Image (tube, rainbow, N blue to C red):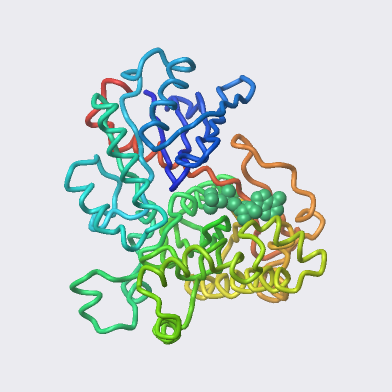
Length: 406
Ligand code: ADP
């Protein structure tokens, strides 16, 4: 059985086609700059060279048409060869488990648009277009917050009047769940220890970033809240800000709620502090050249990660494993080093040589250890494979419907 995983951003569409027996990747790629000039399709079929196509792709519908051409020239002969499509979605409202998409599910996803202005509109557009173009397939929504569904109320509730929790459901629901779950599974495999015996702190550090406390396979706390802004400093998102400051800034600058959300989501974080870039590579390079604001952005990013690891450690009552994942987590030795500065006494003993000399991680070899031999807590770097987790979820819930394909 083949499953196509789609992950859409506001101007991009990432795709991977899996053959589920053996979890083999048949083709993977990205369509970038959708709706902007000079769109680019980059993809690679199994055992072949990467390919690139430049063109004009005005919207997500055109992006899907391009993707279907690439698929039918490549690993499949016709679209009905794909019986199931998994769509990555940030938040499913009342739906906390992966689910076959119906009009009710779409309504629930739409109801969360205000919380995910950067993510949801593009995801919904892509789902609607794809359901029209692939009516024979089962379409499944896999939510980024499902993994956090067991977080206890005391960790999830905000200190607001109770009705916001009980009537409106405003509580911490988290994000990056597929990445945290993948890291937990891979840690257990790497350590040859059942997941049910491990306490794990995971740090997903990419453009978006969050930490997670995983107790015996379940998320019990995470740094992200109900929107994608709370917690750590991110590429363009602020992370925690004193809520008392928000109305003052709105008043002083005459900002509407949408303008305020835009400022917190698009022009804060590494970009806002450094004034240079949201890209950690550029921030690191500028900091190394002595750029003061870039140095502050780098240090603040790492400090918040360190503080958040401390919170997760207490939530778990100690841990066995710490994981770094995400584009920054796997690529930035300096971020890993700074995030663990002064944490030796707590049991995090980083081996500086291993940390600086990682062999590039691959899909087939996604884990490396960077802790010293006597470290009470094992420290791992894991290449995230959220798409595989999404495909597994889709496979799991379509078994009843599509048993004959399996
Ligand atoms: P997304 O959250 O969009 O999936 P990624 O997980 O791909 O993002 O992470 C993107 C981040 O990873 C960017 O900040 C980028 O600068 C950072 N990154 C990628 N390579 C490196 C590197 N060699 N050193 C430091 N940061 C890196």
